[in-house]
Length: 284
Ligand SMILES: NC(=O)c1ccc[n+]([C@@H]2O[C@H](COP(=O)([O-])OP(=O)(O)OC[C@H]3O[C@@H](n4cnc5c(N)ncnc54)[C@H](OP(=O)(O)O)[C@@H]3O)[C@@H](O)[C@H]2O)c1
Image 1 (cartoon, rainbow, N blue to C red):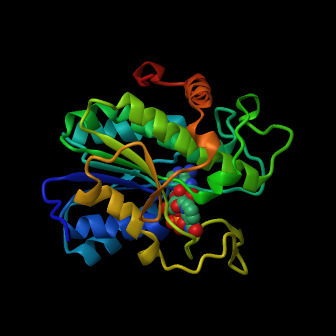
Image 2 (image 1 turned 90 degrees about the horizontal axis):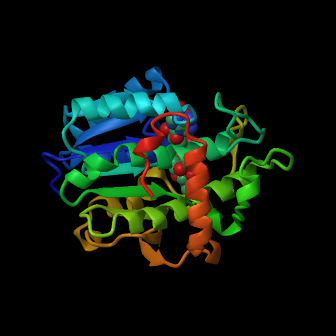
Image 3 (image 1 turned 135 degrees about the vertical axis):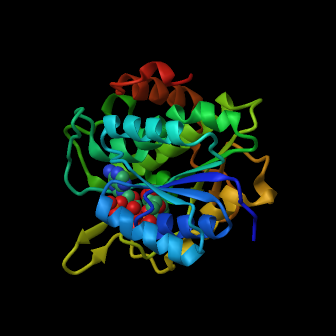
């Protein structure tokens, strides 16, 4: 059991699934744990669950809908004005949608939440992460990135939307982002890694909420499924590992496309182009 007393962690998507388990375990290790939820009622329920489980009162709730850039800016600014350090950022909030939906800024929802959510949050908190000794960013990706084929001219999938394809592309984007950010962070004390947590029985990808039929049909419990991201968040074994992909707890090579540096640069620039607010705070 690691001792995280005095450390501050953020876990996004901590109302359910592996995000909730991650928040519970980091809190149990003594961290001040900031839960991030888009829904206040679900957020408050998670706050109670995490506090009761960990017997640690240093649990906070901040509201953010990662599909809305203004909400990410409000959340990160609130965090920076309340806290002086950020030791662990777990970018975990994610979704998949059968229908093509656009956000208020005209961005396809899966790309907005799964990629821009991680991209903007990490960038807006980057100075604080860099100022905090041995800080870590953990991006929850997926082995489904192997099916991803990002076309920089078709990031919005305007005419060929398919929920599964958009999801796989967004998880490939998580890897392209992780590797480029690791380059930017070289020479700093901050690490960034991506993880496929396994195929887990969570609320993820529920297709038919009445029958609870879901995709993927995970068999692993959220408690087991959260182990890899907790490992990357706290284990001394990976304290100096950065810019890597872990399939559960094993470091592996990800898809060939995920290492395409030119594609990573284009995705980075296009991501900045999609940002309406605080553009100047983004590196690269
Ligand atoms: N389950 C798997 O087999 C599996 C496999 C590979 C990767 N993953 C990845 O693991 C991560 C966690 O998923 P999970 O399996 O734990 O699923 P989950 O139980 O559905 O949890 C997803 C979390 O993300 C939050 N979220 C979704 N959209 C959001 C938004 N717009 N703004 C803020 N929060 C939002 C959800 O909040 P609400 O409660 O408000 O919906 C929930 O807390 C995701 O990134 C997913 O891609 C999962």
